[in-house]
Length: 426
Image: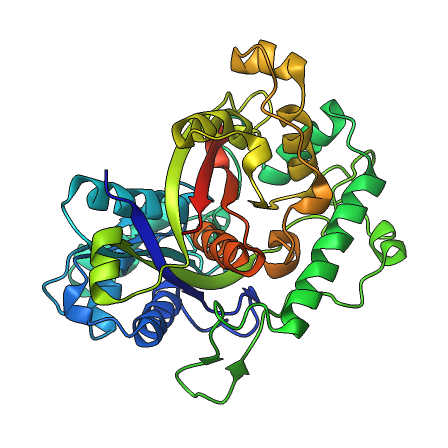
């Protein structure tokens, strides 16, 4: 089978929601990232055959942002595009879908990625209010339009904002992470230390220029008077003492999860350019990495919601024909410090392997000191639809920098889902 080459990856700087990109949509951010990716890669736009983008909170005005990105970036209008939603693994799903097209020979050049704006979430009204608006739009005359609102009560005027919660369990992500922390005995101190490490590494990577090849500068439209050159969520001055003073958010009495050891609500976009190995070499492109294998999996969300990567990882390793010990660069999405530490704990547990995975031996031990060498989502931010693409790009660039042969990406996602991807260097 042809190898899928990752030619280049690029992202906007990530920004805390309501700040630098407060007036931009996910579509705006996606167009910025893709436009710059095309420019930097020096690819002929006419050779792109598909655009696939992940997005978790779609706009009712532009639900298929992938196609809108095509139409808004100067790409030929004949290029189709589609949008995927797989919670926090949406960009991974977009990359996997692009790879599958290349594997099958249906395409040799695809742009994949994801975008999210938590500053631009849809605000809903109650059913009564929605019906009143619809009735008023259809009614004739002022009396008819006013009459459509006669059943509206004061409580119907309260906006209904989307909740980051499981429809099945009713628990938010944070509440599910608290459950994991308690059941796995992950201490508050361990979580805060991990979060501090994320910020320190992200700050060091930024100051050393490690992100310069994968992070663009955004001159924010439409006024163009704000310039964003780097992620604005990194707290380089954070200390363990300061983190320890933060109050728990989801279980105020007994909880251990705080704003400091969780990923923040974030705006941003990221994209990668993928080609068949044959096409890349014919065109003279030097890939930053290759997608060797991937696996998606799911577990019961009523158990431990964010353990999906534990179930996906052994399958991805088997498909790649390698073991965990062969991996030199590891990037694990940090939804919460408690989630990452719980994933690591389960991956190294023989009991979990036998009782949960149906395997005689554990997946393997992961040294927390070796993962996320340039920081993770706690420090850099987590635009739901874009994170997977950011992490894939970082792993590929780290493989080039370190000379390691294999890299690993894991991402947990809502619904008890998870993904693992194995990447390799030439």
